[in-house]
Length: 486
Image (tube, rainbow, N blue to C red; front, side, top):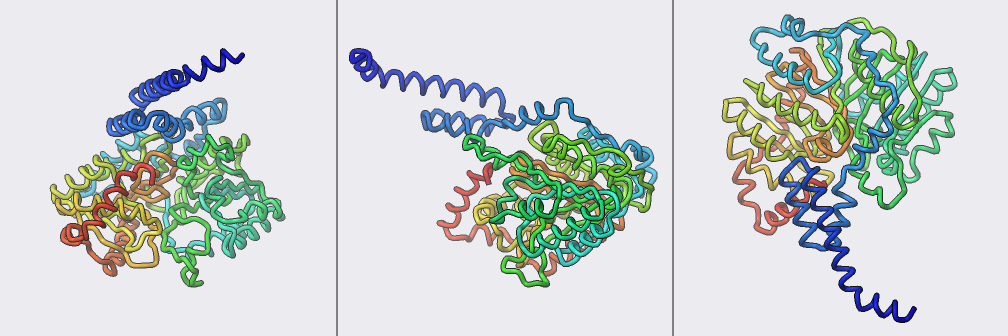
């Protein structure tokens, strides 16, 4: 025994070196074969070899997209919902008949999204913008109190505060009336409050689930692979979606300690079935329960003029849909592109697409918060802004309170709303839900909201960026290197 131990002690450096070498080779091969972006593959291979053993461990924890495999396994045998097919799809030909001739070029964008998604365009919808929780929450609570059949609600953050309590109380009243209620909260988002809202939901008799819960240390990588979707559907007929979580900070009239501007939408018409489909698929994924029948998916009559389609995005089989849709929108634009997003960290391809649009004569306006709630994101953003300003894009810093609005409007006719931000977390790592909309009146309403924000904003100039103190530039540059993980 002693001789064996002595042998192991003598050979330990060789064993450690061989193990480290094997781990580095295996991790490097995996990164080379699986990373779509060349820069990501090069970066990870560099980390693996420049930090032996530690780099391989970091890649194991942060570099492998396990959710693709896990999602595929868990969704085998689960129903693929296509309730929207019971409503009359809008073909590209019928869309072309409703689009004014001067906006006809946008039908090519619809063709692109057709290729990306499994959901059809649906005509006959209405979208009502609701500004901040002051407008959105009363309408959502009113809809809950009027529910007679079903309520489905999914959100990233459901705060355990006075606003969250109002929603729990309304949902509890619905349960006592015999309404079927299902609530899905992201497992990480649920931890934004301590204690979480879950015990109140349980006490009110509300059926709920957490999206991908885990307390296992080696699954901490899932912190970046979250359900960021915000959807509520009442009786299968009235939907709410956008970028707003459930938290008191969105109620500006109540003067919260950390106020947030945001925009949500009340949706009616056939496209509500697509909101419900997304919830039903996530619910089946998380809870294993199938939601079907008239209670959840009634027939929906056209009641408006907006042609719309839901677009899911996530690190599973729906990967890259939002980013490719944004590329298509920028390529299709002829007059204007207006972007509002709280977290603006576009990759080099999106930056090039915005610059190309600007050089074609398209007015490209980008609205970002004057003061971000995530400092590292703001620093990384500032490190990239000069690339846009040099080619004519205009960047505006919207005043406080922190602006969480997520909207894109192209040529005053195509609108893109939902939960997705212009950052790697939304475009690559999280599960998101957006809706593309074709209609002049909605586009004009959103452009008016954006114009009002711009009128109160500070326009950034190239001199503002270049004249920053050198320590700030270094700080921002370092933050930009971390942008894939912010």
